Length: 286
Image (cartoon, rainbow, N blue to C red; front, side, top):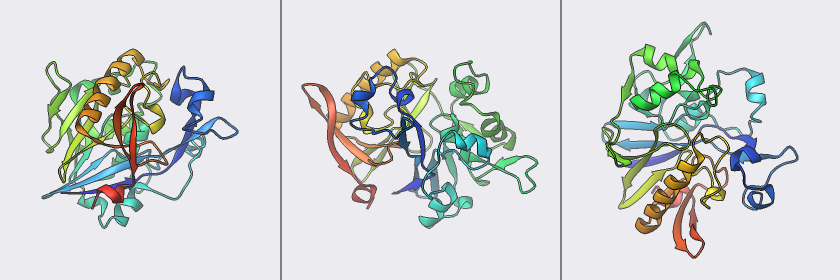
């Protein structure tokens, strides 16, 4: 197995929204804000090369939205999803599976592109199966008013229309489930219904793709929960469960949204689970 980071593009989000009820005087120590209260955010996706499979985990925002839309998110840097895939020695047509942790636009937007005439949409990865789960798909295609602006039809419906949509199973009671893709999945419902956190066995290590369960290093303290989460009290419990697992088993946490810290490990302390070490992806993915 080989793992490759894929940077789909950086953007900025309001720091207050990213940290909910936590005061700025606390969160700005780890996530400094600019003059407009915006903090740096990454869309760091992951390529898994495993036998005949090339699996892409999440896809960033994509590039099909309007200039007005992107203006809200203050894009920065030169990374793109397709460019980053090619920089790793692959082509989008090589992707066999696209695993979407959830269907918010900053995770699924790159899954679907305009067609050549810009009259409709088509899968960005024509040879891939696109993986979600039935509970989350139902949640995203019939969105509540809180999340409606995050579930964009043009990112979601064309996946089903293409015939490339697949559903993975969900756990019966426990949060952990084996998947058809060769890795375990931790299911979390606090941010959105049935968000999927892949746990990948690589070179004797467990690599956890953290998606929005742990957006940045600054979110390690349990009460540091995003304002975007639909069930923040549930997020507290899920973070506690997962971070204890991570500290007990020395998981390597791959941070999708932390623009400045790529992979971390955590440890038990008197204050709870806290940062142990920070790694670059090249330190771990050899």
